[in-house]
Length: 358
Image 1: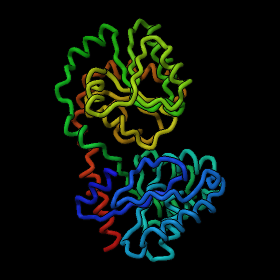
Image 2 (image 1 turned 90 degrees about the horizontal axis):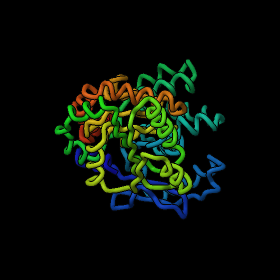
Image 3 (image 1 turned 90 degrees about the vertical axis):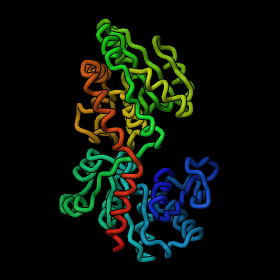
Image 4 (image 1 turned 30 degrees about the horizontal axis):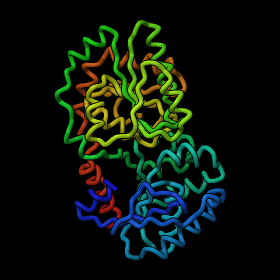
């Protein structure tokens, strides 16, 4: 919704149609410009095309597609397939974004849909990736050789933006020397902001901290996030030197970022990971997952390091490496805070839209 608000400020009217499963709450909140439509059921997920028929029927009943200049599909498969069908029927061009579920679920576990995904990419006027890593993975692993050049020619790597609050409150007052001294004394304050679920892989981070302890470090871990798995939460809270706090407003969360030394989140999968960018604005070196959304946003070793999510040993080594380069990494994080400004990002989208409909 932040993207829609910023596009609106640039003079682009961008009504949103959000199809959701009946009986579930929508992350996207309905308003005058957002239609949330509970148009399918849980059982429909087992038949891609049946679910698509329901979504297509709903979007045509609840919006006037023919009035659009361009259709922006926010995912490749679920949204992109609808966009392609609507484009064929109403002669309206479409653009499509490739996200975590597309790469780590549809392409990986529904191979019979790979051809469909490639067709959606080929018929789109522009294709958006959140990182070079995702772009390279899709092109090399799933797109046949004969179509790669065609799709790459219209591919754009555009990151997600973050809430303006974080950019407006970029932390230039961090006492880096005090942190360096603390690290030299082998004290390390690590923060992880994430939902408590298995995908976020927090126990692997805790294992990495145990390895640091064995080397004489005195690490502290603060985990902040909503508990979606109570059994996992109990396991996480049982580890010594770990403090868990429930999800909190950004105005309070910022203080915890500023009190920490390093941000680490070794998610198994991640579309982008807004929390990495938030942490960076507060001068925190970051550890992120290799091959996932944030990997490739910046050259390796500039803001932090990617980690093998399945290897506590690698996470432990990268924590030590980031700690050893603390002053340099923290300074670079502050310098790059403006990279996630929605105003600039939406300016890129606007220019691409205008080029397509010109």
